[in-house]
Length: 401
Image (cartoon, rainbow, N blue to C red; front, side, top):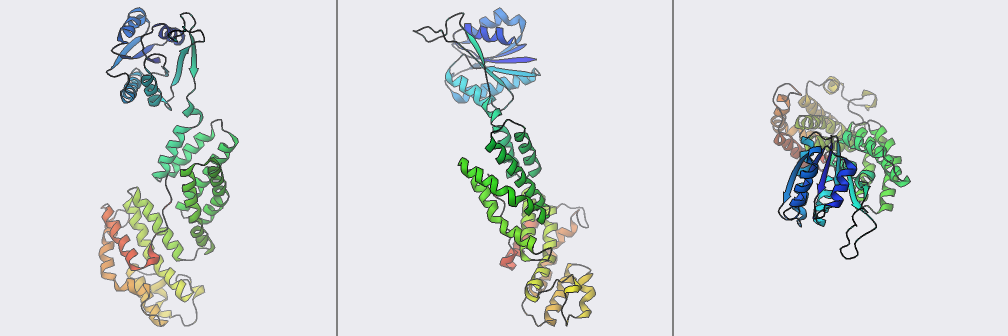
């Protein structure tokens, strides 16, 4: 059904024009104590042709009360299962009209206003018989304000799939050349972050390198501070991604820090089992990165092993029975190469504490048990790693709006 939400003033004629032009099947009147008699007259004279409901405002000059009343009117229309909604802001006070618009923009409502060029010179009101109804475009629809608000909410919640869907909706709207350029570039940025979050680093860089500068250039041209801040923050994080890609799959501390940042994102949305599983993998990767940085070979790749590599450690390194055996093998490997006080050795030296911290991971449904991981379990292991070495801190988080 078509429902008309009508602000009511003390002049009846323009309201009758709105009723005649829109021919609604339901009308919600927003009236004050002073204008209630007009609403009552309209219901008496026309009420047989539509269902109606009246909301009475105690203070018609209150923007807050007008806004709340408009939301109540919307709920009533939805109770009637309205399929078309029109809000006419002709009657009533200016705060009533403003509250109506503030409450209903971006909700698929068509606005209307009854005006006219011939007016009474003393009152300024449109002369009887000279009324003309105009449909008013909701500017938030044209400029995609609702979709952009949805995009920023999804972005800030790390829901990049939903952020991408909001951008696709924006790209379906009639856009200026610069708007289309910006939203297409932002689509490439979000796709790049999705790939980054999936550890597909080369593809992420392929997407971010061309699209991020374009989006940033348009945002700077527009002077949109929040957009510029977020995009510059991402730009500052690109060298870390480039370093990971340049390593061509070798275990580096840049990759360790990226894995820690990935775990942090999982924890931020409450996925502590996933976050703790990533920290477990971080411990293995730390050993590999430490040895690559100091000794120059990849621990899990025998083709890179130098002369003098102890063959007695081969099986313990390539097929360890668990993390602790790998740490012990790395400890012995460092001894064989004359290394002392290394990160791998210090980690093995904390094996009792580590085993206690990892017990909750082993009880997790993603490991060998059925118990969910709590935030505190994740934080304890994260803090242990960060206190162990400055290189075990995550990359900076992606900036938010």
